[in-house]
Image 1 (cartoon, rainbow, N blue to C red):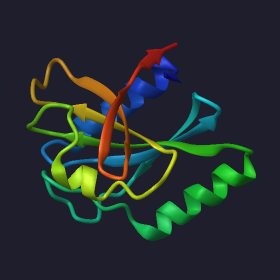
Image 2 (image 1 turned 45 degrees about the vertical axis):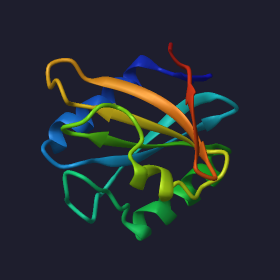
Image 3 (image 1 turned 90 degrees about the vertical axis):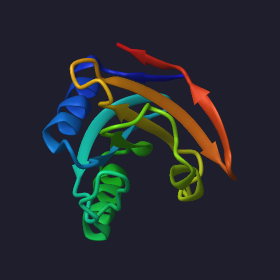
Length: 132
């Protein structure tokens, strides 16, 4: 289970909605299983079916997390037109161990849905997301 403050989840959903119809992406930091920080990132691919984080931004976030005593807990991205399920590409590109993945679906724009997963070595496991 991962705990996420409602304000941070709302900010992630807002980021997804503001980036529509393209995918958005970002990093969530924290300690243990509790999310405490939100870092929206630039999707350098600017596509609706793929994302790539800007390496310079990614490096800056990792540095900021270390400086604050946090760790990267989740990588998030949106699915503007599909369900909140990891695509084959999401699974193939899940390289960061011990980091969960949060997918925000805007398939129904007025009813965004967020789901979390653990993806390691091609194996996808749902993770309970507790909004606090």
